[in-house]
Image (tube, rainbow, N blue to C red; front, side, top):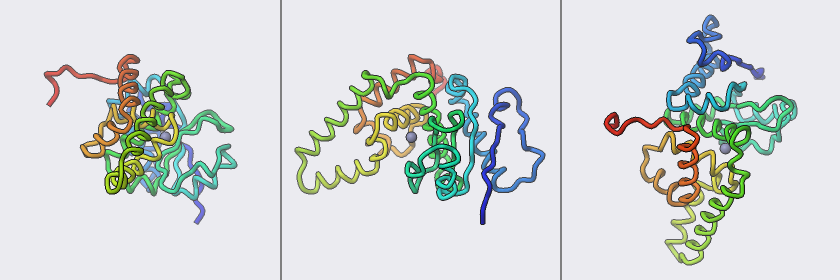
Length: 233
Ligand SMILES: [Zn+2]
């Protein structure tokens, strides 16, 4: 079955009005997904970030195959689409930078993960279009420090320890592959820390310098909503 790509421009009205642009349409799967994404983008914690990056078009794809097949038309490399991809920020395209989300993969995620995925993609837009963090020498130096630490620790580790470390590193391999991925995930986690403490702690341990840099940057740019200590649970 061929599903045509549907383009939704509701983000343009997202924060200006509570009207849902397609509310009058029937509630099929795509509409539900559109609504879900809208809710995730409109999360209170992301308001400062959203304000900073401005409106972007969001394209929804049913599956990875659909996203891949759109590559040539949309001007991105189909090879950059990994099988488990949920969200995608496309800066280099024939159009303006845009976000893409894959319905089938997103539906496999927990509510918490979905929220972080949206934040992660928004952090790419912030990086590429506004702050230019991941391409800066300053950030790359922090990233390199973490990469060197990993090498040093794994260089010394032997036997079971080496295997255990390698398994943990494999979980985060995607974020360790490129400075921009490390930035986007560290910044997204600064806003939505995983409730799984093992996941959270491992990431923060492996990317210690990147995490510290990302947090400081978000605070300096007033992109984190900090509540008074008394309001915290
Ligand atoms: Zn990413």
